[in-house]
Length: 150
Image (cartoon, helix red, strand yellow):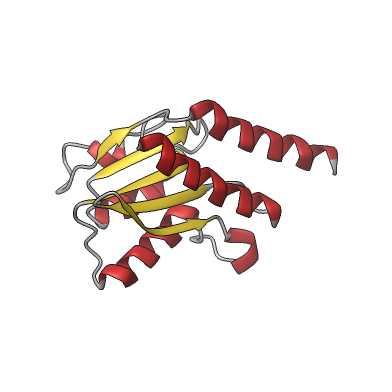
């Protein structure tokens, strides 16, 4: 099931790329069903916080009519940054599954391990590197194309 949900997140990331956004997608799942999905909209919305995972968390909260996403998991094509890792903990998600590592901004393994930090009041299980090659390739291709057009 992990690869299926990550594939859906990859499709969301492709939507972001198609409008010139950094291709990151996120999917929130509860009881084996997708309840929310989103992709990066930072440039489109001119909003620093419009990362895929933040938008997916907001949609899931609206659907569940509450900010606690207990018994939910989130699939993200790129390792979350500090802001998004904090939102994942704050929203009480049970599990985070990500694809590509973010060596510059990653706050779940690469630079920090915020979701399962022992000092926080909530820990999130982290599964890393699911479909990493596909997720990384999407990002690499996007930035290669962008560099060639500038």
